Image 1 (cartoon, rainbow, N blue to C red):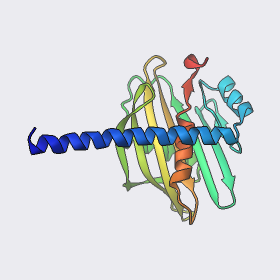
Image 2 (cartoon, one colour):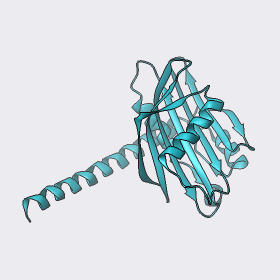
Image 3 (tube, helix red, strand yellow):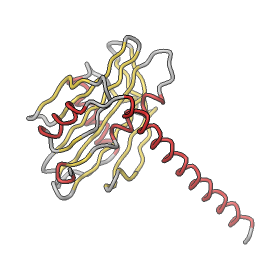
Image 4 (spheres, helix red, strand yellow):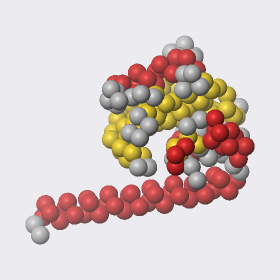
Length: 203
């Protein structure tokens, strides 16, 4: 093969190695998290009252929910750090196309209601097409800020449309941890997000 083909081959192998490493990392993290404790009662409550279920690490609280507005908010607070995860669902979504601008707008709307006006810092946020379990999805990763409270931090948002139920699901999670590395906490929230199952998939 010529030089360009060899370089491309090395690049492709590097991508595969990285993907394998990332998959192994999240598998280990998930095992560690739920070995330390899982809130089965909260997981059961979510399963019984919402069109999906999640596995919840210990110490998370369901701090807000709305059946009419289709969201729930889970939060884990320590004195020096705050971790939050929300799930929002939009039924009858056949006419909606998920785009970066639409997703940022929806995140800002819910944050204005339950997070005291947090907004996405668009110039520090990237969007990409990914696969979330069996669904093609849009993923945002970037920074949020609260102009009134002078705080901020990293976030990730995943949105996908389930064609069988004609519903869009938006899973959003963020961290505030002043003076600490945020990625480990964000990755833990990512693990919880990936335990998402629809009611039709529950066994």
